Image 1: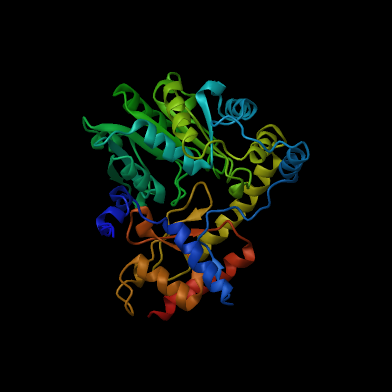
Image 2: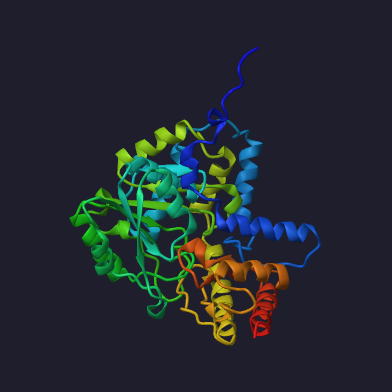
Length: 400
């Protein structure tokens, strides 16, 4: 009889302890579970447009199916789609990328994961402004890097400056992450400040990753990419996505633009992990990028209306404060007025109680590196926004 295998040999790999379950995905799962149990839940958790994918994009996918475009493509995406990405980025932002400097990924999150794996070595430092999107910290940790957090101030609209970045740089700094408009705060980095940050990073030969997921959803400024600056192609890496811009979250198409050695490294990794993004979704993405762009303006107009209502309504809640979002479709209010009341001592406590008692799903600020906030996604109907904010107001008032 053979000896039993020692339990340590069956343990999960230690590197898995460096990452956590996505808080936004957990909120979505908890809300979905309650809905399946018959509870009337207002869901402000998901960062997902409530608009349908435009018909021209869906029809392109149907056409791809009818023509049996259902086989493998190159691991890094089709040449046609890479060209379309480069053309669209040039038209929108004035850049000059070629297909050799582009990789198509399985969503924007996959692009960011690939970038970190391609450029971060063990011990490298990555500067991340706070609040930050939940995934940044985990993918840096998984790559063996060290997160260096730069705190921003709600009183100043979560504004980031080149001086703040420069103060955080050490000899170990390898990369700076900028997400503008920001998820979760909706803060937009002014073009002039973005250029100053680029001057700091390029002078020191530090990678600058610009996450452009929400770049087309700006309320008071024009879309801009730091990759359009002279010399930017040497040290700037763009992470992009079609998910929010074209209401294509489930299609899972993202991309990265950057120096060819970085793109080649990402494609090498992709060839042994996901291989190519779905062939049919790639055809749909070509139409999204090359077809009519009017759906973006329709969504932006709706988000602008909702944003105004959300700002005004949140400021009616006693003790709640809010830095006005300038882009994306999130509000990030400070709800610490509820702390110390009826067992609520953190935004995590607040969110759990809000879901259980008021049946509203929001994401706790701890997921984004702050302790006093919640993230509210207003990518949902005005009817749901009104119902949800009424419930949050009543919940806070009832705490006393």
